[in-house]
Length: 399
Image 1 (tube, rainbow, N blue to C red):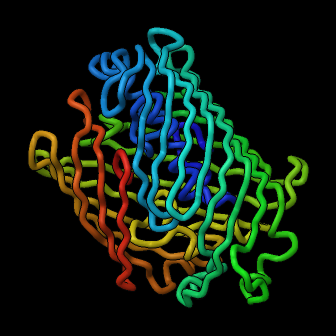
Image 2: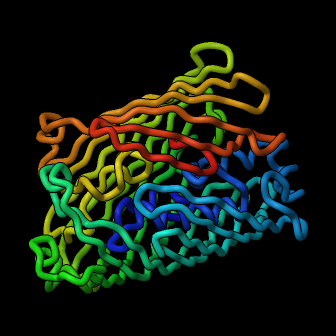
């Protein structure tokens, strides 16, 4: 689980692209009421704003306040992969020194209508006037979802089996500022997972695909991370960009059952094109190679790339997604968004551009939950090329 939900390592053996991203984002929100997709860089930007600091001290926003710096946060969940449900997070916010961004300690739990549930703890620290950032999280999740197999053809066929994945996960990382708005660091990721077929007939082709080494295993690896964030606001940016890149190498030397590599790169761009109208764009890619376990391939639809597709229906060693979103604040605390995007999955990066495209679009409604800063309650409706409709409820923007 990436601290501050930097990316949640996009698609763990416990189907974390959907369930664990909700859980880790909830822990951050419980502690600091931040956008579940914002990450520690956004928290650093918010910490430099006196208005936001005042909000932190009061423990306000959409949480309720048992005491100074302590919040409890209920979060509704709606996701095509894991269903509807509720998460609850609680957290303590504090600063290690006057020049650092807020640090936090959070605990959370979530459960959904398809019997998915998870619990976790998260510790994030900003040190030495925000020069150093460290995070450690630990959690457990039991995730129910439909497994379609690997490759775009498997997703197109639509044949699936229901499975249950249970596992422990942790993703500690540390970054150091090397230039203005630029951080580099290292991460470690450990997943201990088991897979069960949630179906009486275990003799199908897809069921046999999961037999043997794919059912119970450990994924353990380490690698570099990079964040370059120039956004002017972590919740509703009007200008700037955010580049994030990470990679890890799983190896038997790190106690992993498989030797493989996996990385993610994303670039978000924001520009105000008219009064209270913001054009946002995102390009995101996932790349894997080696002995990649089927359940740890790149998942299309993870991290809201793209909305409208069930996370994990399309998976392969490479995935690309491009999306644009027009945001418009039509009233003091109300806004609308329209979005569209396209992408694909394939066994190599070139084929993702030439394969049959996966595309979707939709509309969303926003309500500003805090008077002091622009974190929003969001409801999005999306439709894909197959006519499937997905409804998403969350706190904060898709990207």
